[in-house]
Length: 199
Image (tube, rainbow, N blue to C red; front, side, top):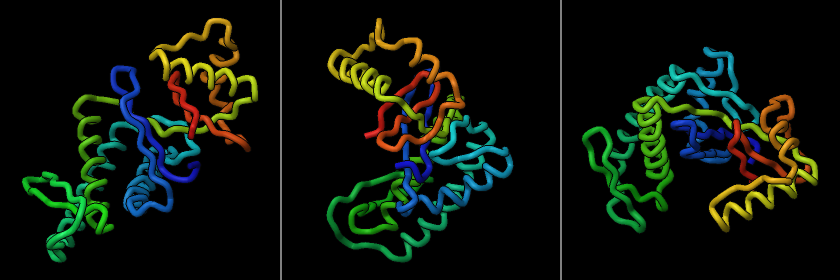
């Protein structure tokens, strides 16, 4: 889970979406071509070990790059049609309706994933949302136990109460960026005050 592109989308200071592509996924290479350009231009990192906000101009670069990739992939899609198959989904993109057999064709799956991501990026730009690359933090056993309790309570009640449960240590860890590193036995993905124990 550590190796890949891992982002969170924040709107109105609230978590809205989390997306992860591992190095082994087909779509990773397409995204990596564009994120490398963003890293160079804005002197930032766009991978699962970083903890950075991606500038809006960088998101626009990513959106434009994906558009070019989609044009190429859709041309391939039109030249090599699949006549029938299972598990298709119909998607509208750029005035075209496509029937994508995402389980039968890697090409169709890449097109579907890129279209979905493209729509998310359009929403980010239109609504001036923020995009963060999520890092990993190391927690000692006490903090891990605390977070498991918080997570269990949230799943059960839909609320988070941290009264008397290592509040000082948790707050310090979340705010101290120097503490971001990988743990040997577990990982915790986080950004700002948004915390989630990786499963």
